[in-house]
Amino acid sequence: MEKRSEINGHAMPSSASTDRILEKSAQKNCKKKLMEFLSKNLLVIMTVSGVLVGVGLGMMVRNMNLTKAQMTYFAFPGEMLLRMLKMIILPLVVCSLVSGAASLDTRSLGKLGGIAVAYFLVTTLIASGIGVALAFIIKPGVGAGALNTNSLGLESVSSNKETADSFLDLARYDGGYSLIMSDIQGTVEYEADWNLFPANLVAAAFRSYATDYRMVAVGNDTNGTTLYQKVPFGTESDGMNILGLVLFAMVFGVALRKLGDEGEELIRFFNAFNEATMVLVSWIMWYIPFGIMFLVGSKIVEMEDVVLLVTSLGKYIFASILGHIIHGGIVLPLIYFGFTRKNPFSFLSGLITPFTTAFATCSRVTATASSVGAAGIPAGGIITIAIILEAIGLPTNDLSLMLAVDWIVDRTTTVVNVEGDALGAGILHHINQREMKKQLEQQGELAEVRVEAVANVQAEEETSPLVTHQAKASAAVPEAIESVL
Image (tube, rainbow, N blue to C red; front, side):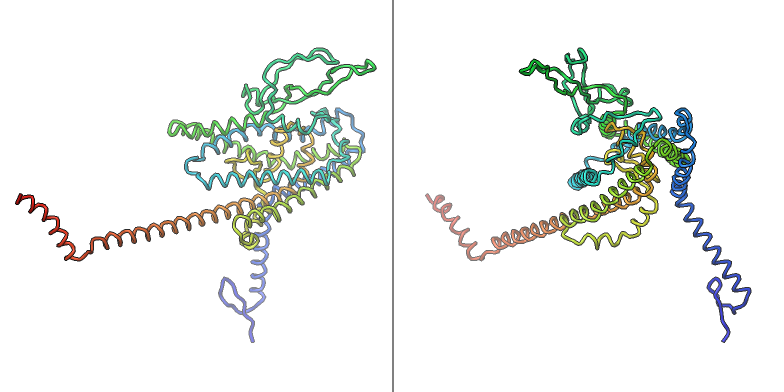
């Protein structure tokens, strides 16, 4: 029997020419799919290539025994990337928050809006707790103090700062008055300020409150030796006051919304500013493969123990992915089950395609406050990390280490973000359906009550004509007697 082939849906006799046509069409389809894959994942591929080339370049330059000045020149393209990331933080946070807060209609949020805000706040706090717990358990930074060699003269952070003070500095206030304090270094006078409510918005863009310590004489012991006590006091440190700017931007956006038509022009201005900022961020993302090559290379050159560097990064990746598994595989499904009493995994099974897209594109901007109204951008997680580091006063000079592995961690992070949003939407849908069911039941009960009331009224009206006649006659008797009298 003669073999037949199909071309464009038409059956044709098989021959050498038709076979060649089919082979060419198959090759074209493969090339087309390959080009589509490369175009969608070009930034990730270039970033991974930049990391690999940076590792090789760093190992090669490491044996050249560069001077400090030469190392600074070698790290210059990477330092430019860090400066770009820090430059974009201020407009990204302020404009996105103002436009996002202005787009919210607080009157239409109602109960569901409050539940949604509470859901995201609670899940964010739980995720933060999981991250802190895993950091204490796995300890990815133990022994990595040597990595912060500061050989390039970048900023450093004081290592003796208390953890509680680091968190309290986010909204700390020490009275707003001048305090004179005598210590071993002489007389100190300082005046503290709110981080949450900055007195100067312009200064908040580059200066924030920070806690420092001084040894203060508190008395003498029995031997006459002076006793000193470490006392925290407020100072002004270089670094953006993210929390103050976030609070102002959100309140300002709500105020613009309250203005109505008068505030529309300014809202459009911030929306356009936000869109332009996103374009700048996308341009910076395309510089990352080149900049990260020199960031990783310079870090390898200045590190004495490369094995320690790789080990610390491996622990960081493991801790991050494990946290995502715990939060996305246990915590979020339990919250969904607690509200709906339904199987969360059957709900998530219908979201395989969005999860695949999230894992492939890793487009996001996270951090609860800093992402309000912000659009997703490829590999935007590093922007969020820079914002968080600036907010809590940690140095950003080692951001290059996170940049090198962010393309791995960012994928699982995006999947968990999509899962959290989907489960939150499912919880709100369940609550909405339950409220609608209650309303329908109440309306049905009211309808039954109305029917019974109408029936009672009709029953009262439907009396015997004889009884009615007798009642009228009895009512007429007094009148007749009265007339006779």
